[in-house]
Amino acid sequence: MKKIFYFNRSKKFRETILAYCLMLPSVTVMVMLVMIPVLTTFLYSLKKMKLTNLSNASFIGLDNYKNILASESFWYSLQNSMSIMVLVVLFCCVCSIIMALMFNVNVKINNILIGIAIIPWALPPIVNGILWRWMFHPGFGFVNKVLINIGIIDEPINWLSSRLYLIIILSIMIAWRSVPLGTIILLSSIKAIPESIYEAASIDGAGVFQSFFRMTLPLLISSLAIVSTFTSITAINVFDEVVSLSGYSNIAKTLLLEDYMITFTFLDFGLGSAFTYIIILISTIFAVIYIKALSKKVHYI
Image (cartoon, rainbow, N blue to C red):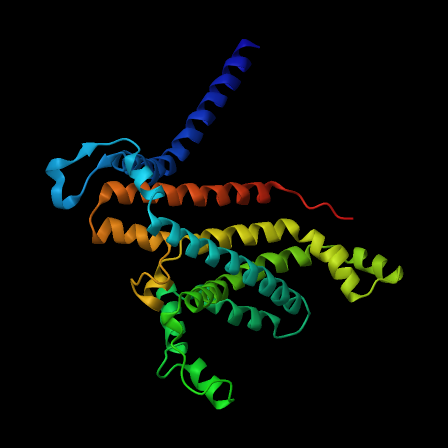
């Protein structure tokens, strides 16, 4: 009995050691590429440190955070980022539901249509921004030409010089890129709903709209939470599209763009690191919501 006990114990010990050895590479990568840079950035955020004057670098505590929160530029960028986020979530959720319902119809070319719909999501963000910049160019843009030809406007509109227009265009552009992934998530959730629920509803006299609003939509709440959360994080961290659409102008300046300007244009690594941590904090809030949404289970009626 003792031999069996020691054998089982040594076997369990070997399996534990093997598990730790298999985890070691991933843990090492996480520590080297995530934990150390995050910790270093936090230490930088507590210092007054400009690359143009490194000799005067000094520890200043939370002064960088106080300066950012007292800055009008930060609140301007935050307003832009939050406005874009709200519009992106709204556009993406509505369009994803519509697209998922369309693709839920069984037709032979369904897979081809889904493959075509994924193209905007597969495009690099910078290419996406350039395409939309051409569409809304005041001189030879597609949108202005269409509006002039159908008689809605008499002269071209300079879309990219207005803060309101830029925020709306950016929101539509980011939503256009995010809708394919949202559609796939919602489509998989729709297909997981048992057909027996709809059959029972039709027997009770429920119409198409009643079935959607009273059964389909409530059962998609968890998936919609996931879609809205990842689109929120995407909207907050938007950078390439803003640069390719409006350059580094202050009109549609977002949090990430201002962080980039502070860190790599003005070379203020202390203030830029603090700005980065504020963005991380905002993104973490939505990441926590995302994790909670994943842990929820769908209960069928």
